[in-house]
Image 1 (tube, rainbow, N blue to C red):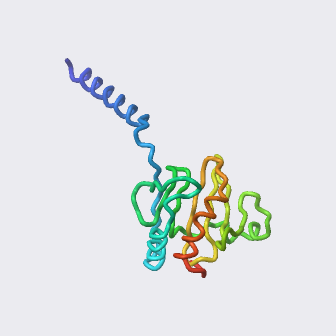
Image 2 (tube, rainbow, N blue to C red):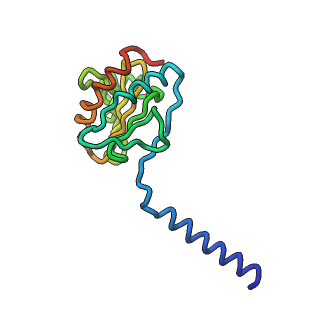
Image 3 (cartoon, helix red, strand yellow):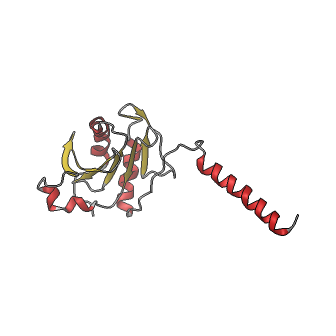
Length: 166
């Protein structure tokens, strides 16, 4: 076999393996970018991780990869929590505060203030407000997010004190 045919055969086999690996459904686990807050916020997030519920809106805890005390999940990709995120830009937008942004609405559930932002594809992102750390919760699949926020509120109230996050 000449060198050109050998390389072509090897490259073809490699292409088939890469394609097969990319299409594999064996790994359906969720992933989430891990925030990198300062030491004070990291400690608050670790405290939150210790008190998070085992179930949220009927979904069992199923943490995303990579494993971190700053992230949690329930039901695979259905509900993803990240603690210690940056303040969302919409939180300081006067249009949101004045109710003039249909895709971002402030509100409160069970003593926790949230900024709700509509994302594409039936997903919503909620970020805590008026707490010493920003906690983000992404809810996907057209799920009614009220149950999610009700289930998470006690843990947020217990672990993340009211105040201003910096």
